[in-house]
Image 1 (cartoon, rainbow, N blue to C red):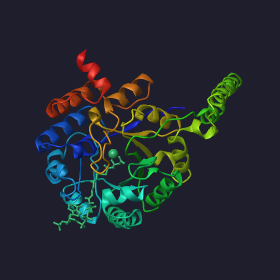
Image 2 (cartoon, rainbow, N blue to C red):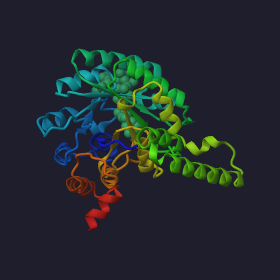
Image 3 (spheres, rainbow, N blue to C red):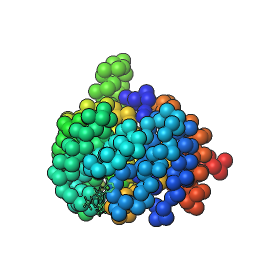
Amino acid sequence: SMPKFVKIVEVGPRDGLQNEKEIVPTSVKVELIKMLVSSGLPVVEATSFVSPKWVPQLADAKDVMSAIQGFGHSRFPVLTPNLKGFEAAMAAGAKEVAVFAAASESFSRSNLNCSIEDSLVRYRDVALAAKNHEVPVRGYISCVVGCPMEGAVPPSKVAYVAEELINMGCAEISLGDTIGVGTPGIILIFLLIIEVQTAPVFLVVYVASCLVAVVQELTLRLKKNVTGFRALLGTVIPMLEAVLDVVPIEKLAVHFHDTYGQALSNILLSLQMGISTVDSSISGLGGCPYAKGATGNVATEDVVYMLNGVGVKTNVDLGKLILAGDYISKYLGRPSGSKAGIAFSRA
Ligand code: HMG
Ligand code: MG
């Protein structure tokens, strides 16, 4: 019930550094990317071709791209909010791009200065141009469970945007819990289905223990006077279920910010549901400049540590990854946002 291999998409140089108060010099970004590549990460999102008035931190996108050409075997996708960004990315040598929509109207306006529908119109143009260049496009969706302005976001809205992005030709959809509010839930039913397919011998024992767990949980909830069985599912499962109706699982990625400390649990849950692409950020750098108070993504070091622990391959060398985390944390002059990073560096 867990994938054998997880593709980690490192977003630190983009999602992380876009949110730093002090602008990080190009040479430091390039050295960081070099270290990330040498740790074996297959994908390192390098920068964004967005308006420098909106995100001055990444105004050196062209210089970063030219400096990293030929670094190892990693792929270096970049963010492109419109055709102008796409053309600049192509001129700078990018071979993969990402567009970024939102499942919340207010967030779309604050991040892109346009409605969800208008952003999708722009992205259709980008997707078409990308097709002509044979360039793969990743489609992000922000605020998949919650929005800093609108609160809870309905799963149907996320599924709608996901379907639009798939229909325009996106090769992958990354589901962003931008403000890290999502909670994991209980997935007995899913485990049961998988178990029936793979190990019928354990079925009886398994069904029995599932029933016991459900009865226990229900009794507990009734005692606490909590109504509604659905609460057991948390907020991430219903969202994933809705998206899975319209997007094949192998095209899905999860992108959890760790603002409320839920990211690792939500990742484990997503993997158990069959997702095998995980976004993370070295040392947990980052946030989103247009989502006030949002902290960084889940730390790459913590994700790799967990996956090593459950025997899931990533091809990432944790030791080298720790060095990359130390490098950028020292440069920024603050402790790493990775628990594993801190533990290893002390040892
Ligand atoms: P606008 O102001 O509505 O657009 O911004 P505009 O067309 O009026 O352009 C304004 C100026 O920007 C013009 O320059 C354009 O030429 C220029 P001026 O004439 O004033 O000198 N411009 C550009 N320059 C460089 N590259 C471009 C570009 N486009 C226009 N591509 C726009 C609209 C979309 C451009 C703006 O809102 C923008 O750049 N937004 C990007 C915001 C951003 O990068 N946010 C963070 C990334 S998303 C994220 O972090 C979430 C994610 O991690 C998932 C998750 O966690 O949820 C992906
Ligand atoms: Mg993000």
